[in-house]
Length: 590
Ligand code: WTA
Image (cartoon, rainbow, N blue to C red; front, side):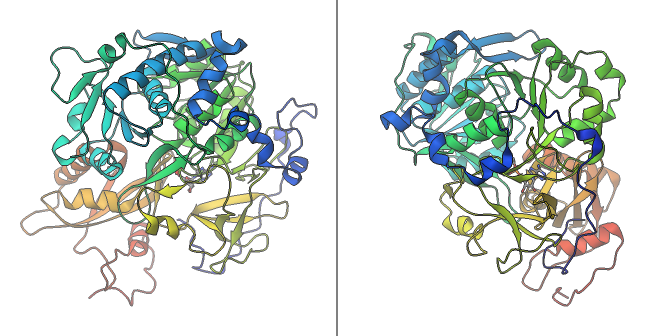
C-alpha cells in the first residue's frame, strides 16, 4: 500500500546494508561525472549556460541548440535519428536533414497562420514526423502540446481544449478522435499521410512541405518563453498542463551528460513516447542539444523487437522503465540469448521504483544494472539519480543532481533525520522547473503548499549516507505501467457509463505493472452486476479515455464511501481491497 506521511510517525524498517557486492564498478570508470561529491559541492548552472550559443548571442531557441548549430558544425552529417517500425519503414536522418525537415514544416505552419506562442497539438504515432513536428513548432516559437497516440476522444478534448491549441498535427487514422465541434479554437488539422480529398480545415503535411524552403530562421525567443506543455494527472481534477520554458534545456543538457552519461560516440535509445515528458526532455531536447545519435522505434511493445533494436543499431545507452524491464523479464531468458546485447555500456530507468528483482534481471542479461533517475513531468528534468561512477545500494532512488537540493520533510517543512518517512521535496529554482500550470495559478501554488519547498507528492526517507529511498505516492495518483493516471479522470469516465451511479478508483499493487487501476462501482437502478457489465464498463473507459486508464479490476458495491462533503474516501477503498479494517470513518456520510 502507498505510504502516507503523516499517517503515523513511521520510522522506516532498518534500511538494507548499503553497498551490494555485485554492483562494483571499475575504479577507472570513464563516466562524464567522475566525482559526484566534488561536483555537488562546487556546481554552478551558469557554467552550463555557457555551453549554449544563446549565452553569447542572446538569441534563444531550442531548435538552434538541438539542430542548427550541429548542422553548421562537423556534426552536420552525423546520424541524429534512426527509425524503424519493423514493418518496412527504415529511415536515417542526419542533423543537416533535421534542419531541412524542421525548416520546411516550420514554413508550412507559418503559412497556415500559426504564430509565436500559439499552442499546437501533436497527435501522431511514433514516427520521424512526430519528432520533426515538435521541433518545427519550436522553430517558429509556438508551443508543442504532445499527445499520446493511444488517447481517445475525451483525453484529446481535455488537452487540446485546455491548452486552446490552434492547430494539431495528426494522421488520417487518428483524426476521428479529435472532437472538432467541442474545440472552437482548433482551426487546423495537418494530416501526415493523407490521401484523397481534404476538408477545408485540413492541410496535407506532404503537400505543405513539398515546396517549402530548406532553411527557416528560428523565431528568436527569451529563456522565459514556452518550450512545451505536457499534460499530467494529479489526485484531483482533470489533467493539467505543465508549461516548461526554453531555459529548461540547461537542465536537459546537463542531466543527459551526467546522469544518462551521454557522449559523442553513443547510440542512444530512449524508449519513451514524446507524449510523455521523458520522450521530449530525454528523447529530443537533452540528447540533441548534446548532438547525440538517437534510435526510435515504432509499433507495439514486443520483446524480440526490443532486443533486436539493441543488436541492430548497436545501442550503447538505453533509457527505459521498470514495467518494460519486468515485461522483458516475464518473456523469459531464451529471447535475449538470441541477440547480441554487448554494445550496451549504460542503462537508466525512470517512472516508478525499479524493484531489485527486475534490476538483477537486467544486470544478468546485459551485464549492467539500470541506474535510477527520479523526476516528474513538473520537474522537467531528472533530480534524484544514481550515477555511473558511484556504487549505490540496490533499491535506492539516488542522490540529488548537482545544483539541486532534494530532501525529506514533515508537514511543517522541517527536514527529517535519516530513516524517517516524510514528504519528498525539492528546493525550488532548478533550471527546468515548470513555469506554470497552464492558466491555473491555483493548481500551481498547490505544489508549494509546504513553505519553501516544491512538494512532489511522493513519500520517501533519507539514509545515513544521504541516499533517498522512494516509498510510494503520498496522494491518490496512480502509477500504472509507469504511466501517471489521476483517479478523477477515470471516475469521470466511469460515471458517464449509463449503468454507473458512482465510482471510486484506486491503484492496486501488481507484480508487472507496479499498480493496476481498480474501480469500485455502484450501479444505477435497474442494472444488475455481471461479468459482462464489468467488461462493458472497462471497454467504455478504454474507448473514451485511453486503454491504460481503463480499470483492470472492477468491484460492484452498494455505495461508494464518501465524506459528508462528498469526497471519495479512497483510504476505505484501499482497505476494502486488502480486506483490512477501514479505520476511522467518522467523517463518512450516512
Ligand atoms: C514516480 C515522468 C520511483 C514518482 C518522469 C513521481 C518514480 C512520478 C521514479 C512522476 C523513480 C518517477 N523511482 N518513482 N525513479 N521516477 N517516479 O510525471 O511517483 O509521469 O512522482 O514522471 O513517477 O510521474 P511522471
